[in-house]
Length: 200
Image 1 (tube, helix red, strand yellow):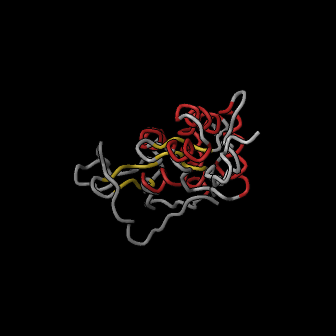
Image 2 (cartoon, helix red, strand yellow):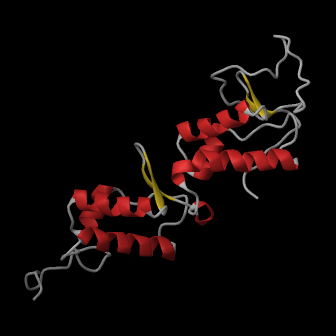
Image 3 (cartoon, helix red, strand yellow):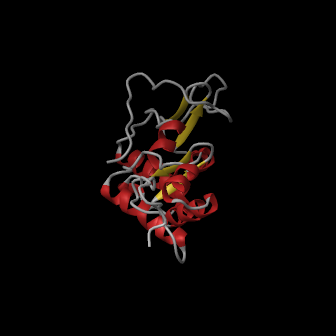
């Protein structure tokens, strides 16, 4: 029997009906997953907030949070502090989020070794890498730190990170050498004459 009074309009939202019964958070996760698959929430966009989902489906906010955590566990979305849940693009959903920094480092290393990122070419900025991989700042910096430790890239204060001009170790060691990086270097404008891109 319907829980709506006679003549009362149905205000239960686009879901068609409120979710009830056992393991409601699983049902909600299924609904949101279906929408992602159908392109209602495409990769690179944010899901509705926990509060919005709670209102639409008539569930407690904690239930909405549990449903979203299911999708995080499936690598379908990633939680972005202060912003919400970002839908991952299909091409990066297979990546292991726990070891994402190693994946980022490996892909940049491949681009350097293949010449797609040439000597003295600018490495994609932290912001670009964060957006491309839906990664945290600390994850991106961990990846770049690996490459710096391997001597493949150097940080240039106030400009960003660049592929080491001479990977054979013949860099000048003078303090005036602009290619010798400093800790805490920030990202700047692309180095003149070199462009960078992400992905294949």
